[in-house]
Image (cartoon, rainbow, N blue to C red; front, side, top):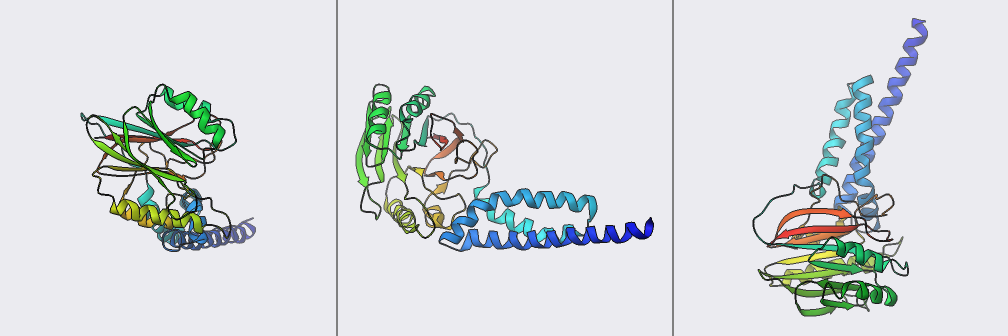
Length: 309
């Protein structure tokens, strides 16, 4: 019995070691691609990167139970994964006695017929500003019908719109390098401070087709860099996972708003969120809380962010 069991145990340890080596190599490669390689490769790696932690965690458990020497082998990929994911790790909610501004943003999915229910459910939570993206003619009309009475100040262009309790000024439609309008800029005049809000519906990403999105993100970064406003918020559907290299320039101009609910804030697909492509960035504002909510029939969760003014 002993003679048979020993080779079997040895083969099992060898298989475990081989798997650990393969996952370690894959982990280091994915983290490297997600952080430093632009284009479709980095974009794809940034989507997979958060989930790699589950596999690494499972291997750590296996190593603790069956082969503790493998922990040293796993140390490097775990550290690389943590460093790559650190900029997108959850933050912490804060308390403030200052006035606040709550902004809720959702992609309502064009032609889904769900814009009205999304707008009504979001409005029921009484945010100060609501932004909607991927609007078509019918969904814009439905959103206006649902929101205009409670949110008398609004501006919409192309596929994006914003509704506010407070007056809006300096409204501008933005193309951000495309030949049609998928973004806007407004100034929200709260009683305590003016806040510039950018709303973005980035171009879609498909194999071999992501130049439009990358152009919009780069131009948005340039636009906010030259914006002299003291308080700036950028929200919407960025079509880029949180660790996507295409967001690098924007991260250099604005602070990425971390979810404060203990999660990674995944927003898509709504039925089983696997990644966060609906983003929030800010400058000159304190983040009181940041999370997500389900609203309407969209395939995106809404982002819910409260700022201290």
